Image 1 (cartoon, rainbow, N blue to C red):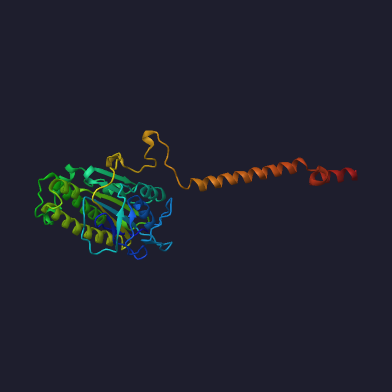
Image 2 (image 1 turned 180 degrees about the vertical axis):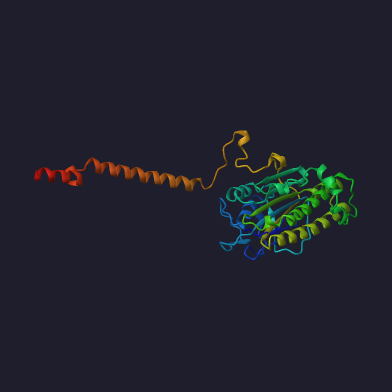
Length: 344
């Protein structure tokens, strides 16, 4: 099963906060490109990738040991997060937008009959993507700003436990940041309530995008007390979130945190309501699109091709031998008939 590894970022960087022993991250100043993050996540979960990732930060681990989950947190608009309890940290170059869609589809296709958690969430854009039979657990997760504002006023709200300091409960940007903190809290609370999801045989994947700091930086400035207070709060929350998820998955999970000041290009993606995100086999079918390419196609094609060639050759050989058969010598029926005629 997949164990959870947690990563955090200093500037444009990737930091591994928590990781099981069999997922071997080496300490060093090796930069990794943003477009390679999905392949890195796939390799930590024991899946194959299209092209080899020639990056020395991650070494090959045991073949039969895989983490139970992978959590990727993308924090936008931050220069530095003080996350001292980490496994390793690496510079992030070429910070282009990326998604874990390919990894999510792999999990969904390989463990379709189980209950994998495949959760991709961007509260700032009110996006929630879910696949698989575990949807019912997370479909009540607040996503829109209106839902989260209501959640912040209910029992168990993070407002009662966080030191807000200069942050306001009424400002739009402040509420966006606090709503993302609330979502992290609610995810761990749901996993605490439904612990069977962390104990089954199917791996889980979480992809969470946090842009509250980016909005605070744009509105108040990076030197404002609001931005400094929010940065300190988020660092503490991420550290706690990583430890809780790591423990819930039996110390068998990998969580990465990617922090970028800004992405080099915008990421566009079609939104989907959580009420529409039930278990699906072909997400593109509503638009009459073909199924996405399966990288096992070449293997299946070769098996079918050479099997058909072998059967065709066998048919030719059998037909040739039947055509050139001498009934008097090659057939026991005619041979016995001839003997009977001679005896008569």
